[in-house]
Length: 161
Image 1: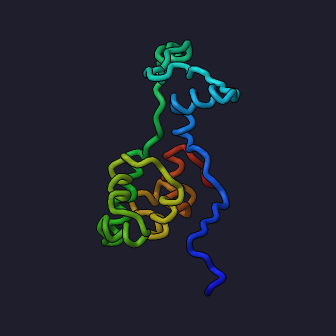
Image 2: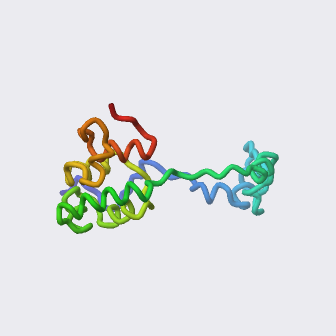
């Protein structure tokens, strides 16, 4: 115990000034007095709200008249889904639970507000099964197409053989 001296303090490393301290006016003046090289530069538009500068592209975008929007499922598709669901005796909530989606997704598809997603349409097709009787005649070639095939043709996505 006699070997350790509790009064001796060993400093291994002294921390330099933090970034905020190095940028202060006092630190700059002290560095200049010591003869160190100090580089200062004015930031462009510092302290001003110049984030949104008007350019030529902005005017070009303002003149643009094309409306861009996503295709939605048609009401015909919604009726097909609704008739298939009702023929199985399922509510929107039951169908949604069966395909692991929210009930709002089924409501959106049936009302024509949904953006078509082939993955969701495939789940709905597997849950409902065969196409409803009202669309069996329009399937063509003996009605061997699935109702989802009709839906996809109606969406213009893909034609089934």
